[in-house]
Amino acid sequence: MARGRLIGEVTSPYAPPVDTGEAVGSPVSRLTITLGYGPSLFDHRFGLAGKKPAALAPLPPLPNENLDPDYTGGDLCIQACSDDPLVAFHAVRNLARLGMGVVEHNWMELGFGRTSTTTTSQATPRNLLGFKDGTRNIKAEQTRTMDDYVWAGPETDQPWLRGGSYLVARKIRSSPAMPTSGWPASSTTAAPGSCAAGTPSPTASTRKPEPSSAACSSSPS
Image 1 (cartoon, rainbow, N blue to C red):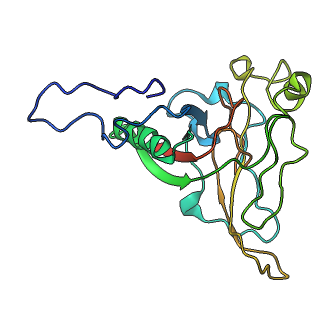
Image 2 (image 1 turned 90 degrees about the vertical axis):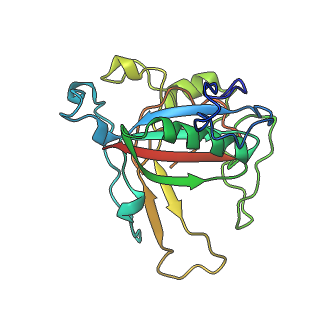
């Protein structure tokens, strides 16, 4: 899909197509796919308990949070990022279809735009409340700083995680008028990706987050 190809060829004109087809004719639009693992994956079911990083643990609720169980947890997380939201949705949708019978869809969240500046050449965009969040974020050009604060290195207890990262996901309701007691928020325990956000999880690479992302978490049935 990242090369603009269908996920499978049509072998019979009378059978349903393998690819859902909504992105046919669309450019790749810099599609990237990141796969992450949630803490619950490392249990007795798959013999992965010994591979679990010590730092991979659920994030406890923060003050004024109203965590929704329907949007929390998951063994796997798929993050698809693209300049075209249709291409991102197509990737997540087809990967979920390929996993039918093996994994069970848990939750999905659609995103749009770039949430913060990631390189020195970019201006920090404004969020839905008009603020510029992420102005002081670490930039991709700051290789040494990225190695110290973003990418897992020799300090991790699991060698397979080196070069990966963690993601904490939080779904927050935005409102121009914030109540004095705080605003309700639901937590999504996700795996790694290019945005910050409910439970730390390792990721392959999150170096170049793109606009218009869609994330999907799924749990083995």
